[in-house]
Length: 405
Ligand code: GDP
Ligand code: MN
Image 1: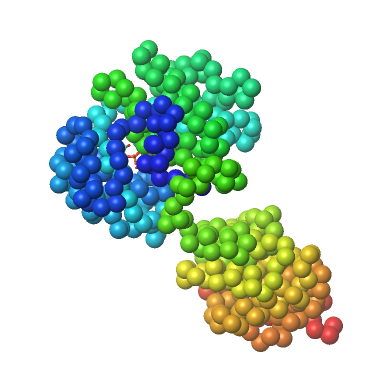
Image 2 (image 1 turned 45 degrees about the horizontal axis):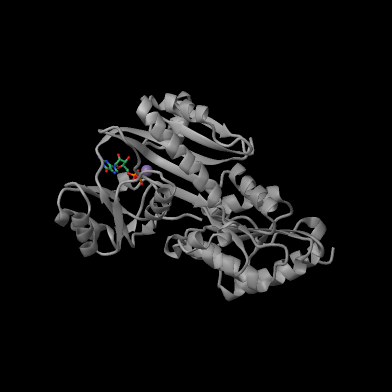
């Protein structure tokens, strides 16, 4: 689960990590009033969305008067903000954070996350802050330091000094960094985080280290154990399709390709996506319909896959283990018929009662394409999505599975 910058900054404050003074506003008037209560003569108005890269998208603006702050707030509030990190629809800006402007001398990158390889928490730091850390990692990996914390020993002072050295900090800032890293480490453990990212961590003109941005993610399985964190959930920032999928107990993740995938089992779903990629296509989603699939689930799954209109073809890849293939076939047929599907659907079934399932699809007259194995199914669906598969015979049954053979 993600939270907003303003919520993360409150948690930072609770754990003695310095942040600029500010408050959250949901109207332009409020934004204006907040500037009056803050020190200084310039303020930063920041769109609150669950995505970064707002700066480049016009979501971070420095105002030099209360009126200007109100104007920035009013242009951001109510808009859909599209950044590098959102999809093409963007995310709704329902609130803005208004804070005192900081005079920046240096921008650094500092984050804490779970390193699955070492099974430890690691700090990642770089003097190249304010930038896309993935780009820094790809182009100048020597500018990044990884510091892994032993769970029994905890964060050590020398490790903070290692980070301070790569950031080129003076002695006084070194002490501040140690407090910040200690705060991050304690916050991470206390709230079952999966990531804390400060980008940028700044050194101000007067030598103070301050978290100028704050991004926190939490382990979904741990959120119910933390009422304060659970209360920070903002459903308006979550993918509506993913939320709908949860209702039907489907594991669904939106992706940016055009081939819808309906698969049972997370492993099979991953393999299916890999195969689609291998054949030159791009999956529109990850979807695991689970073991106990039924007609309603299959229908809900088709709806999700088709809802945004970008899907050009659907690949159904189901292994009938717990569920029999004829039950799945009946579900697919009902869903396709009820939804008046016009885009091509490729079905690959395997498992119990596969012959029966395939013959039901073949006899339906609904123009479904069937494939014998995952390899040919992926090839077929990629061609169909490209619009060059028109000559493929629909309902082509492998010879061994001809009805009555
Ligand atoms: P992000 O683009 O969503 O990651 O938003 P950030 O909070 O990181 O802000 C983007 C950039 O805006 C920062 O890297 C800074 O360069 C700039 N910025 C943000 N707040 C201030 C501020 O108080 N003063 C100045 N001078 N620049 C700021
Ligand atoms: Mn940032």
